[in-house]
Image 1: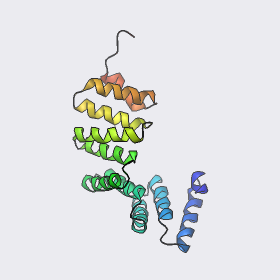
Image 2: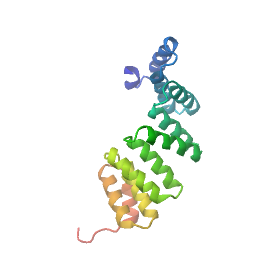
Image 3: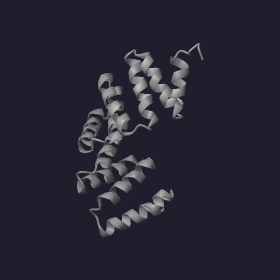
Image 4: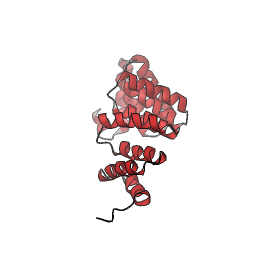
Length: 177
């Protein structure tokens, strides 16, 4: 973990693989290897380690969510939704699970459902600007520009560059300011 935190991925990989030599069913070592491989864009290898982590710890909501994210990126939306649903069920206070599911629902043009999940994501992860960006998008597509701009403004105040662009394009400037 120290090697991973120090961004020394090769050392971290060697250390986690050594753990697995002595404890092949160590779910956390499998998850951490999955995380490293995901971050280094080796998604197939990441998926294998996340699945192993889940096999050894069926309550591992991080691995469930990570598997869902890989399926989401592959545009395997039904599979991704199944994993996101499972993550929300396993860990009802996991803001990222709601965020990912809400984002997926938004891409499927299921904006009302997306907004419900993004509200839950906001409840559990209020400092994540991506939530407000995506809430703004959902409101934009439902033609509620006041709420869209309100959420984009909140995301922009948190430093979200996409929200700053959205405000510049879609939100009317207040002449009183």
